[in-house]
Image (tube, rainbow, N blue to C red; front, top):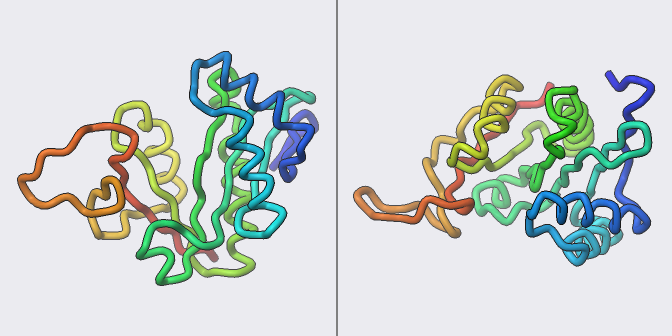
Length: 171
């Protein structure tokens, strides 16, 4: 449930400078061009981007890709929640939950299942916990790395590309 000071809506072009600046302050590589691309994809209906504001200040966002780049989701027509971020100063205030509620509600209109990928480094610990607590379960295919499943015994670099994919049955 959104309180009076939190507002979630679709990304608009006027939001892009504020979003890019917020991530620049964090030294995260999320330039304005990324959000311009997202906006174009939103306009052609391949992605939607929900942005959250608290008292007019940008707090976070997530996107839904209607056709996932992850092959098993794509084959099963499972929309994927992708690139989900809440600014550190706004975490633990329910914004992530509100964004996820909105995404799951929109996905449920077209699919009985939502998909999401999560990184395996400690930086993703809060997201890992959130997804499990929300009812997401691993898709059973194991770790995915740079577009493929690593072989047993293979060495891979631990980075943001090491992902576990999860699904949730939507009611």
